[in-house]
Image 1 (cartoon, rainbow over the protein chains, first blue to last red):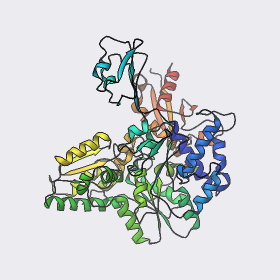
Image 2 (image 1 turned 180 degrees about the horizontal axis):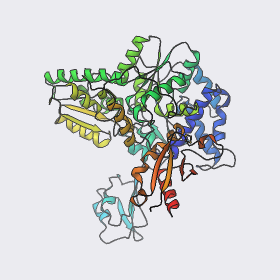
Image 3 (image 1 turned 135 degrees about the horizontal axis):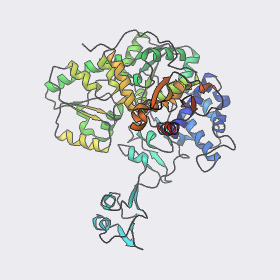
Image 4 (image 1 turned 90 degrees about the horizontal axis):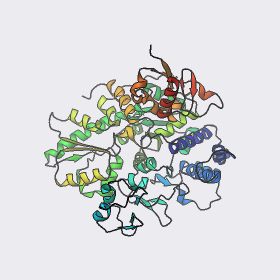
Length: 478
Length: 84
Ligand code: FES
């Protein structure tokens, strides 16, 4: 989700600087200087002092180099050593998010507070309505007993003076599955058993404390070795991200050193056809409904948190998976890099035998900057062909439904679309399992679909328009 | 005749990635009293990014005056300043 704020700008600056050092082949030699260059002596700082700022930048860089912050053995290990280890690394993990504990500000526990606006009124609706009797009056004002309070928010709703405020923990609020919570030191920690890698915590944290581990070093290394052709496969949502048409995007990848670029929409076409056939088959066999499988954060949520929905999840593979397989069949030794809108795809890619690495939209943007490529001023490539319009539409909510409806017998699909997975939507899905009201359920974890993933660049409103322009240029699915 | 203000927004990739993508919404974000005075133009690169010491992207210009670190809100505030 593209939200303009300083945490996002710092992340993009760090990515750009790392990409620049990789282009210059100077990563090991110069990475330790990045925190000093970004927070020079005598300059501004955002935390308590310049040294704290630099320490936080160091750990964010450690995440960008692909390490878990909590794996640190020795605080004195310099970034150059991590860069050396990253260059030599041959194994990845499916843990894609890491929390920079230096950056986590240990937000106060999710709580409700009485502000000075409290008038100590006679009605005292907060006290009367508190189900836990956790409010008392002293000194003419209400007080909340933190031991008794269960954060139900009833007091906030009933106070006529708006004197009660809610102090949320932004990452915990954003996480739809309760996977991030405080450890014994009050620092947020992600529970991998619950996490669905959606990246909502990355966007929500105002301190930028959650970092997505990057594969930039691995991608550069493979290119520099020159032994395997590096092929980018770009998610349909990319069409709405850079204000540039797909011809220019294709040219830019080749300028960056990729041997080829393939639209994942070609894989989406296979997903659409397979899913439409699967839906018809399941309904014929008497299944009440089927739900989509292309959003890995959603399918992860079902697997980990809503097992009663699991039998209804389509077995059709994702567009990325089909597209990577197509590339692998043509170029068996290719290094396949999926260009992705969100961190959940990085998790999915780890488990896909045909995808080697992931490059997020942000990392691609940072790489363009470092390479001095302006998408607006380069000549566009001609595209090899056009995937169907409905396949390109997978980049936004409603795209899967659109394509399945186009391929299914007229009037046979009664759909329900959930665009944005939060706690309420999970509740809705739980209820839906018991009493289905549709026979096809499309769920996208991000509101609006992949054009609003945690790694996107454009405002989703603009992205939706630009994606639609790419959809309109393509022929209808037949 | 209404006073006309020309605002040029940089659509260059550097500006776009470093927060400028949001500025494409300026036309929709303009308050009605500003709308009739403002003419919005895009630029493939305003060339400020190549000059040292010009501040941070994203860049824009109002009647030729360079603005750095732009947000929708800062541009609207600058447009009001220019109008008055
Ligand atoms: S890219 Fe914006 S001024 Fe050059």
